[in-house]
Image 1: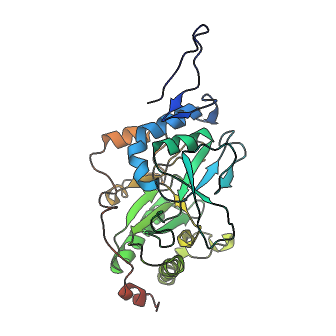
Image 2 (image 1 turned 60 degrees about the vertical axis):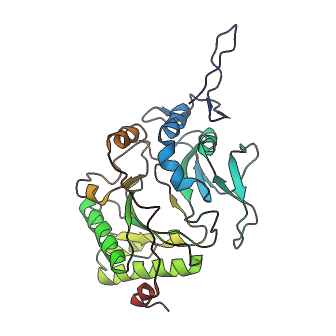
Image 3 (image 1 turned 180 degrees about the vertical axis):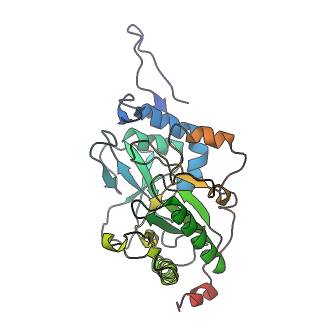
Length: 311
């Protein structure tokens, strides 16, 4: 719980403390449109810590920081900075352009450390510290063109799920907190980044081949008109995806949220939950929408690779 300390004579409240992390400027407004402050952000993470931590601890993360709020300058950060709390850890990951260490957290204090420095989005790399070079999940980011009907996006999510099932992979559904949906398949960490990326690209390319009217795997904006971009690049080294229960930099303080496949039919908007509404939704639900995600045992098999024309 956050701790408040009085200063004696003045009886003025000092900065609140969350998990040993002092929250300076707690009244700073991060989301002006809905009045969400830094204190609100820390309180949100305190409330949902048990839900988000399994998806983020001991995994390399990339951050979107907005120290002055979501409507001011925001920037992407992968490495440590001066003055960052020790609750935000560092790990060396070879094979990239930078020799600087990358970031991760290992407990609730790390969450509060991120809130303290104005992190409004937490993205993970898709690997754990135990297997830094072998991804343990496939992520297909279904990113619709502006104005595309939600029913088309929902149908695309089902098609992606069924195609992965044909390849022997059970998948899970995520609202990204934006206009898209993620279809995520946990996998055993056996293949390296290049192998997993090649498989993800082959899945995306096959979806395009089957439904060229609906999908594109080309990241160029001009190719996306009226279509859904199947972003497979999140499965490459350094690629990342928004973490379940992380806030987004949207004006309404929307959050990424795991969904059950049964929720898809009744979905009215791609991003149904926000910082102020998700805790109530979680409390009302009786089952984890991603039940079994961490216990499922499945791999990208030789048979699946051959089905996609991969050696």
